[in-house]
Length: 207
Image 1 (cartoon, rainbow, N blue to C red):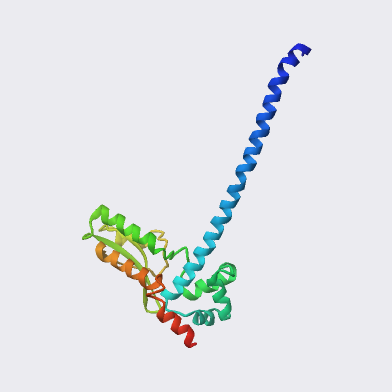
Image 2: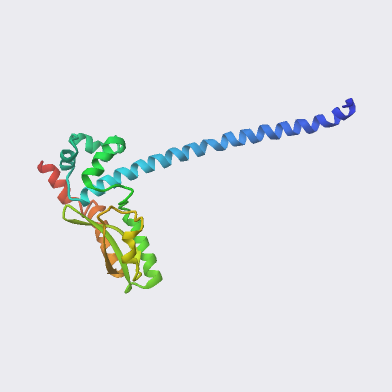
């Protein structure tokens, strides 16, 4: 390559180097908020697990002390897990889910999402139409799992599918207007501290 040609290429190479450096810096700068977002997502997931645990325990009708006795943990340990200062994972998660016969995978207990699902079914079929209510019984308490679009063949086929529910789930037809009222009642009882906490708080204090 001649000296004249090298001279013409030098400015172009410099521009490429600057562009490459800027792009690397852009990638590095952009990676910072991505890492922060991942941390936020992780924290949200852990918070979601503690909410699920407290909700599942209350819906099964147990106090923190009763759950501690059922799992062999100290009361303080259960309270720390529910408070978020100890992770809900590993052996603790396995023992607690076994004691409750529930898990976040088979029983998400996300009633805000379930309420939205019922509203979508109402928009689609009308509140007087039927849906299929999916639930389980725990400690003589009925725990809602899902509402499915009504289909005459659905009730026969749901058990044969790989249904994402506990093995002992049950189903029953229910009008959508009553399905919505049922979800609203569950949210009021178990998620509203001004309405649903009296029994559980008094039970803890008595013990």
